[in-house]
Figure (cartoon, rainbow, N blue to C red):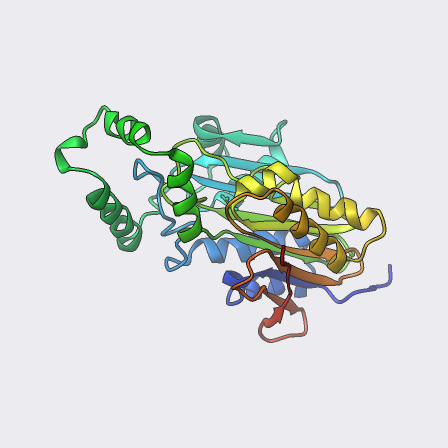
Length: 317
Ligand code: GLY
């Protein structure tokens, strides 16, 4: 089979220093799935990224709950985990779901049981920084004697607040997530997403990252798309799948990403959304609804020594 496009990998702004891990896999003839898993694992180990893996800011109870997903464009197999606690590499648990589970999504205790059965690496993802952010939040929000084992304080807190206003404030300050996608020497594509979700989220909250079609979608015939930002918006619009659908209807990858970000504005909801996307020919783009922020993503092909910063499009209302 002739190689139409040089194998490459792209990722969100927090992945630039880590794409080399995936490019190495591609250079050695590995699959797009293996490449995106390798690169995402490196991002998950960055303790300074407070939105992914090690050092992710915990939920309102001080517990880190991770969401991750992988999708294979060749087979359209997918594996995702949600609200996963105590595993070092959520993306690799998602990969195990993709490869071995009869299901697509596993959450909470079930996901943890599955990860244990699959011998995924267990461990503590908290850091001094993530503990400090949580402790500061608790100190500012509660009287010390309110906090007890019964977790009644969280219930009291929820009752005393307008929860949506509270969440809007949080989501504006604390968001992140990594998206990585690649095309290998066979022209196969795959996409990965990993996140600790919105900082100080309500326990059990799933974002868009583990929802196939919302935060992640991949189809060899058309391309791949993945999202960062306020997950609730991408869930409501099925943003990743919609970008692919727009390409299927004949739009370019840039036009498709633009239109999907316009759709987010149509929700007239608080919070921003960002995406990265590629088509089946290897054209790539990123887009954001945030007018105050450049849309940055990183690109690296197998001949490059380091990743290249690229600027996508900012989509205003
Ligand atoms: N986009 C990540 C999240 O909302 O959890």
